Length: 164
Image (cartoon, rainbow, N blue to C red; front, side):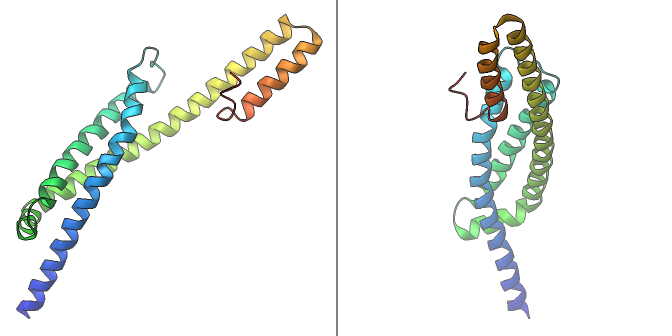
């Protein structure tokens, strides 16, 4: 009975150490995704309706990732017996750091969705203004060509960046 309990505890600790190792890799990758968002938000003109909220969320994500990395690396470093001991001692810290990170990532995901929606509507508004200017300034043939170009850009903007 005692050996069975020891085996169960060993297995549980081993799983937690493996989880900490995987989380450390995953959290590092997450930082590489968050950095470009931080760069975009630090550029002049990043003063949209949601940019302040996004900046705060990105800062929170970076902070919680950092905290999660510290705990995960601390747990998973060293020999197996020492990592088991650290896992037993710091399991709640690890679980709390993971929960905090998960929460901030959900909030950032929601904010990114809202930001994307706002950006799409801004692009549509800019395209409508461009069409209005074309209608005022161009002759009939030029209008048709430019309307076609604007329609192409509006339907597939990512593919048509070269056109711009």
